[in-house]
Length: 330
Image (tube, helix red, strand yellow):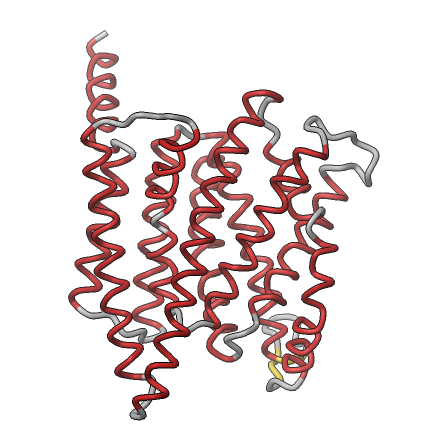
């Protein structure tokens, strides 16, 4: 029952989270900081109440290690959300972030001195080609759709390039954080809930530097059209409703993934997360009518095939099937 619940939480939480993020970004493209702050605050308060036991529970991993991890996590979260303010469409945002495998492999080779099979290198090449195709086609759309003025088109393209640079930086930083987290867990053991809490509570003072931008967008949110919340009948500015739903669905998504990792094999987790990304992408394209050409579809196909190849899904499925047949015979 719990695995089925986890899958339901991942699809319901993560997919709807992308929808509310896009609703926010379409109305106010620069609202990334207030969204990030709200998500961090909610998870920090929840963790303080239920994980840290109102601050009475001592962390299993020393705070100084969390400080390093938190710096990376905070940077990745802020940069990823801010990229939406730099002419980065939501579908490209999702596809580009699927390139985490590339970043993990590159840093794994450089830092951990890992070596991979030809099969894995091939899968990474597919992911790279897929991301390149989607990125290249999006670049053409930015320059052609931004403005009839050549100067405005060039400025829009430069802004888009900055967004691509931001996503690339966040991708590499996220991979480095994963390696650091892996070494910590080997030394101190796995403490997922604790890490989730400290990764969200320790960065909160950093939002002081973003306070002006957060306040400006809070004012803009207050000025948005009123919306009557179904069932409870309360009327609130619609942007605050979108933000609240984004925060709640983000929490549901994170909890779903956490339950999934504790209840299911890594193969199942990979399949569910990959399929969830694909469903979110399809919904974003169809519901929000984001521009998506045949080339984008080809690039997306390369990314998802490469991801499944990297995780050796087919090999693992074959092994599982043969094992089940043996069990039946016995």
